Length: 352
Image (cartoon, rainbow, N blue to C red; front, side, top):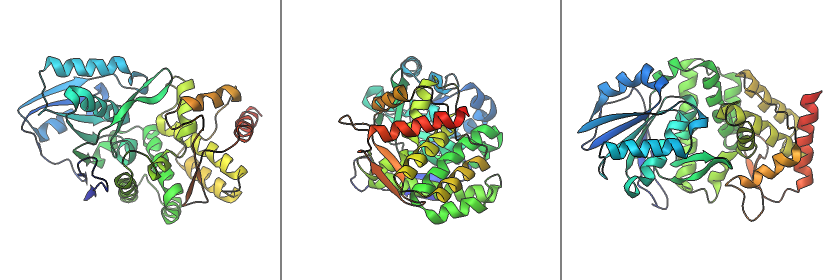
């Protein structure tokens, strides 16, 4: 199965996403595979059996969001220089979202830009992170604040990699699937409610539908000047949660699940969502053991963290909210008092 991304404004080259068994990959120049020890131990042989290139190098970086930083990026770049890669070389991101983001950013800045290929091995990266060309690293101020838009030249989705994925990481990927259904497709959300993504046939349908949704959005708005911002539903809150917990407490998808629930409470207060819809969304998240609560110890401090997010501008915080299930609203004019009340309600609710 192939899904094409054809950019409406032609700012980047079009490319395809392939959903099938990993095919033979042939590259004329040098290739560096960026991966981590866990994925290397489980799947690297499979990739190398399918990969043909002038020279192949393996660059292994530590596993975890806390390593998605400038130090690790420099390590990757140093290895590329050590192996004398050039502008005809290609990087392969072989792992989850952290690997994909860092490899893409390294490709964007190495010798002012070289090709890279995404081969995602987690559900979250297959349905979301590998598609769309967002690359970057975290710093002390927040998540993905340093980065670039740099599209891959191809994405290969092989769901057999998910067989070795821990259940917690699998669930984290489902949060991103639910995110797209809530904001873009009411029928898809209803289908998710009655489906079981632990079953391979249902999972294949969900992955295909999620990628088709994201591909359509990205093709229309590559650099997030409009509708692509909707893909950040739940993320405004999630990025604060990840930052203040040092990227060690929650997987990204888990933080997004909590952030979605927080955004829903805000939407409820604005009459954009009704109580029944909010419960349905929360129940679907809980169906896959995703967290939906967080103890906001200091609502004022939490609120100030919003301004470190790259989505804020002109001292305004942009919130992506569901406008009933299957639709959305982008709001940057919500008064501070309303948001603070939601944060207080979370604290009071969880402290009871």
